[in-house]
Length: 150
Image (cartoon, rainbow, N blue to C red; front, side, top):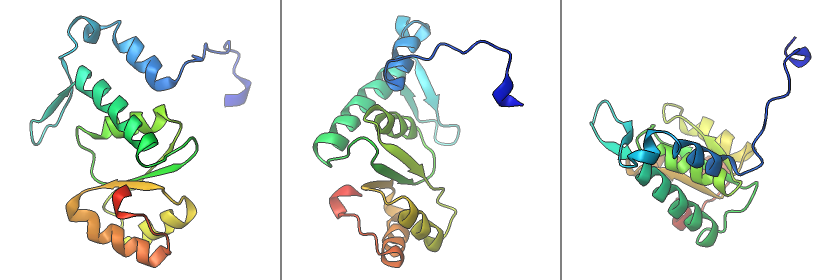
């Protein structure tokens, strides 16, 4: 059984996990060549470097905290396809102690509405094309997110 492992307890970093990841990455090729692409979108060929991921992560975390009032334990919704900007969204949410609630855009508005009821997000990341579904889900769930938080 997994809880009865004879292995020693692993070292768990006491630092914030996002800062720990960035520090570890700087000890690899990203430390020597920080403009190396870390994510490349196979379809669009768009790419983002380690430096840009780190910069966007910290700027977005600051905006989430200082402009939207997202605090530790707050739910942050994502209703979008994965793209090269998904990592900064995930990292910035973790950096401030938020709880990321991703929902794949293949699910209909009623499923998204249920997620909003169970884990009501203080803000949600989406795309312009999916915004009507987000608004429909808010109407179904009764959970309203201010326009400035979408």
